[in-house]
Image (cartoon, rainbow, N blue to C red; front, top):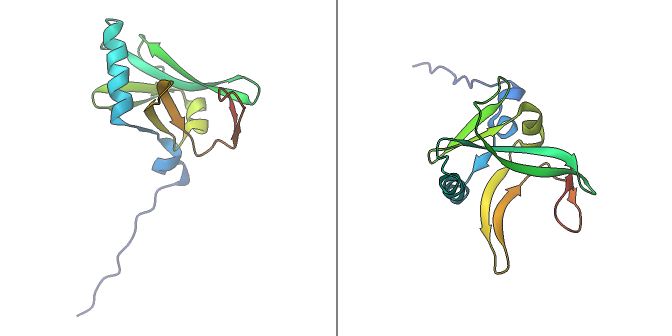
Length: 128
């Protein structure tokens, strides 16, 4: 009996999940939900991005987004919370994990970005 070879369907490079997406942990989504509820805007979104700033070149941005997403935005949803990222920022954030970190002296959102080559001493900016 002759068996047929398996054909693996490949996706174009630009469609690979690690290049087009980011991961938002449940802890990060829970804290975002709490912040939206505190603002009395539970249906709003959280905008993630980067800006040119700081001593290393770029800084991460987390903002409330009350307007609908723009045409070129990408919307990610985790545990019922929507996060929106503009196309240009997504190039630098591809493969990133957004987490919530609680340390002894501080707490906040943490970007674990595989594209980050170095960061400044104060930890507020980075290079790719």
